[in-house]
Amino acid sequence: MKNYVVAGLAMSSFALVAPANADIISIEADAQYWFASASGEHRVGDFTTVGNDWDSDGQMRLSLALEHFLPLIPNAKVTSQSLEFDAAREGQLAARSDLGHETFTLYYAPLNNDLVTVQFGASLMRLRGSINELGNDTAAVSQSISEDIGMAYLRASAGLPLTGFSIVGQGQFSVGSDNDVYDIEAAIRYRFLETVLDGHIGVGYRDMQMQLNKNSSFATDYSFKGPFVNLTVRF
Image (cartoon, rainbow, N blue to C red):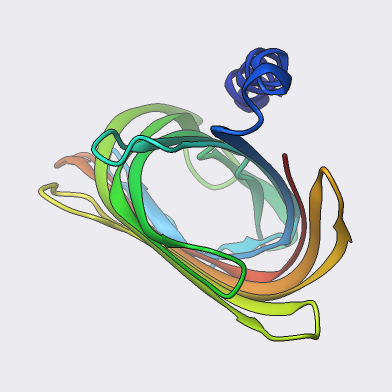
């Protein structure tokens, strides 16, 4: 739940100012439920996982974006992502990983209309988590993770005229870091609401990789993949 605090506070603050600035500011709130399957391994101390059977748990992402009319000042987005998985070896619970994180993005939107949108910018992923070996076949070990990872950000969408449907793709990629992280997704959306509020529902697929290299005694090589559903409201 701690991963939702930042997004929740931001939603409350922006909602208070939106009515007074409806003509010059737009707010977009998005909730995504991700049916993610995990795979991969980690190294903690002298122990490297072998034969982990990772579970497939649903993960939640909350996002809030603030866009404005000022051309030289970037727009802003804050995202909170849960990412918690258990691993079994030989039928017994053996490890737990928590890679939940917040991502802060500044971006420009040179195209932003009902048919085509293009966004590009930079993000900072703040990863505060842990990996725990529970001691079934090795001594119990706990490794905390605290990483700030710079990333490039790109998003684009295209509407299908007169249908209410659109396709959207988004990607973030680590830059200037020993860590190798990417997060890409694609979806098809349907606009079900077009009044003072714009509402979209969508389904898509997401692929995320986390190769973290903190030091010689700790590293991860994780992959998370799976379909998702999401709800977006813009006002």
